[in-house]
Image (cartoon, rainbow, N blue to C red; front, side, top):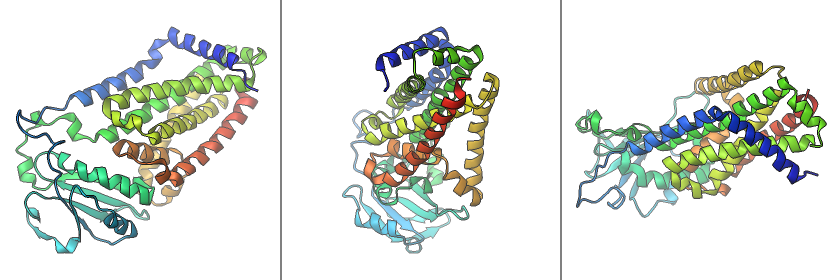
Length: 373
């Protein structure tokens, strides 16, 4: 049975170690600074006396498709009251050399079949009016939650926003364009959170644990009254707390609305556990701190390579599905983009939890058998 008083003592030890080496948190501070720059780089577009984009009427949208699917039928059965969405086949929309011919004041969204062989992916191409894609935000606020509720795999859908009239969009100079408009805040937020999680739960855990092994302090802890389970739980609590605090700090700057969404917290905690399991396996199966750090870097690079190959070759898609990151990324991105309920993504969430459960069993076994030696 775990003794929480012993857990508190072990946590105090980890905190004191971090206080002696505050530079270990330099990356989290750097990523937070990046989030602040992204959040504060938006120019004020609205003039006094004019309606802001939040209070103006939602732009009506024409939704066109190339292939009729069941999830598209579900979308059409659940059209919103605002904005007005009209669903028609792509061949019924007139085209010209300059683009699409649609009624004035309307935006247009295309649904195209993706180009990846062996992957049932789709591209959601939004054609916005004016110089900013903010006119499509009311549409996406309806589209992504409804789509995710039916499909449960938002990573199969790629969103691209382009101007409906390219010539008009060129009138906006680069000086008037903010960094936040050049990238999707949700995508950047997801990437920053995953970097913080990897650093806190994998890289830092690998570094601290391997350092304890080389100095013999981990063996001394095992020979102390502390149990192996208590040592492992204390390590997990410490690094999970760092991960959650760093992630919440970044999201509170970029997307504070996500902090009240249960799915965000659930994905955050489950992903942190998965990365801590990976870090535990790496640190216990290597003999030195340098080898463990190199292996952690290889794990990150191998994951990036797998994601790239999966976008080009269908065989790697199945390997990608065996990684919990392939589920955590779209789930985290989806919950930052819209208020998605936990029940609508139970399949993806359950698969990710099952994969992490296997990692947890392997991490516990390796730590008990090899971690303290």
